Length: 396
Image 1 (cartoon, one colour):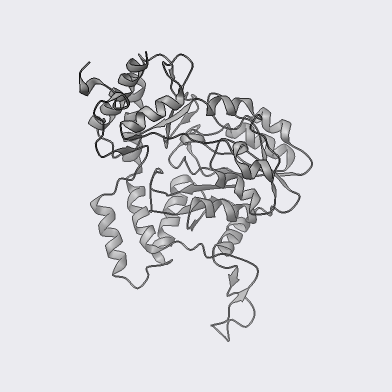
Image 2 (image 1 turned 30 degrees about the vertical axis):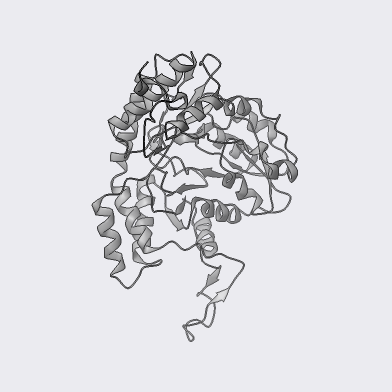
């Protein structure tokens, strides 16, 4: 075997001298021009461009309201508060997610309650949710893992039966569809993230969408200090603003909104490219034993945020060895996620142990996210796949 056929971990040349990450942004000239145009205006913080972006996101997902904030985490934070979560309340969510999902409960002094997931979609298992409901359960926070929608109808049925608020963590799923409809218009609230690795980017930023007028009013209040100009006296004293509670400075900027509007214009282009890359992975990894590719339900059309494969027992090396070998190729594969019940905070404060949730644990031992973003060329993709083949052959 020649040096260029030998994996880097065994002394060969890395597949990517300068590296490639699992995700990344695609910024074009239209985005750059839009941002520069805003810089020449009077408003560069929250102003008319933000309002336009909110309207366009609401129209895109089919919701009545969209509230832009500084991050997906901020969106989850104020959604929990707007839902009225508080001390003594329980909120059921998935352990296979980023910590911000569960922190929507923690920030409101509520208790995060984890339920196990479905092995095929990696999303919350509705039957496991049913088993975790108590008289203290107030809300569900399902997360659409990797862009594949949850079992929305089943979870809404459970919520209706028990009078629960549903806060959809759709940070992976802008552009995904369930039964033909875009994710985001379901009760009660959904939120998106615009981090650079997400489906569109505003550098940082997030959005909450809802069809509920009262929730929208509360969300807007929490976003900006819980300060109101509607109190008696404002008409005669136009400077008068009254603080109604403890709010936050989660204001989105016109600079970000200008970028986001141009990105939203390209979302179908981004989806088409992500779909092409996923199809290439499915075709080119088919002959490697021990790799399981994601399952897609007939009722959904994912906007793939992540492409997470499973390295099972039939693969020639362990998941850890595979990750180290890919990193030696300067391919920034990642594991999404270390389950929340493995983290010290959720063990020490909320009483979880790493032995709980067997389906989640089994998946965690196998998951690896491969590079997937619209900026990847076919050549980039081929080099990733070639590296995987070479690693498999090396450990055979």
